[in-house]
Length: 277
Image (spheres, rainbow, N blue to C red):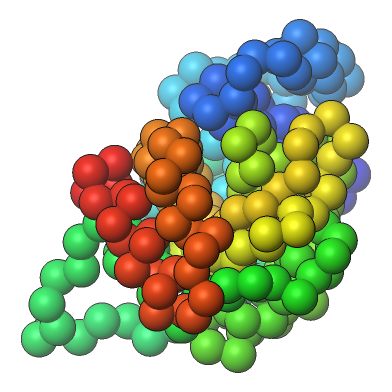
C-alpha cells in the first residue's frame, strides 16, 4: 500500500508540474509530461485508476496528507478510527468530506512562522508571501544544491520552517523530475505539502549565475517557495504574477543591483506591485 501511495504522489506531482508548465513554461516539455502521466496512470490497479479518474475530474489534487488528524485540503477532522487506518496504510482511505485519498507524511517540512494578529494591518501584494528578512542578495552559492540550501537555511533561521534539511531534500527531489529554471535567468525551486501556514518565498540573486540545468541559461534570480497542500492551486497564480513582473528587463536588473536585503525587498515590491495583488 505504501508503494501505491508513493506512486499516486509521483503521479500527482507530474500533473501539477504540467499545470505549472502550462502557466509559465514554453510548452517544450508537454509531450514528455503527457507521456509520463499516461504511463503512470496506466500502471494503477483498475479499481484505483477508476477512483483516481473520478477525483481528477473534480480537482487535479487527488491526494491529501493528513495533518494532526485532519485532511490538509479541506480541514475535515477525521474520526479516530480513520486516523488509525490512514496510519496503518493497509487500504485506500478517502476524506469523508472532500473524498480525496488520504495519506500520512510524517517527514514533511513544517511551517512555523508567526500568524498575524487581528490588530495587524492586512498585508497586500508580495508582502502576503514574503518579507525583507527572506531576501538574500548576492548568494554565496555556486551550485543548484548550494543555492537551495542557502535559501532554506534563511527560512529556518527566520523561523518560517522547522527544518532546512527536509526542505532541501524535497526541493531537490522536485528538481529531479523537471528543472524549475526558466528563461531570463529565473528559477523557482519549490516544495509542496508543507504542513501549516501559507505560501512563503525567499529570494536570492547571483550576478555570476547558477546552473540549474544544462537545458536552460544560468539562473540569476532564484525563488525558493514553500507551498501548503491546500494552496497548491493558488501557487500557479503567484508564479504567473512573478513571471509577468520579471519578463521586464528593468525589473530583473533592479533585483540584481540590490546589495542589501532592504534594497532587494524594495525592488521586489516595486516589480510586483501590479502583477501580484
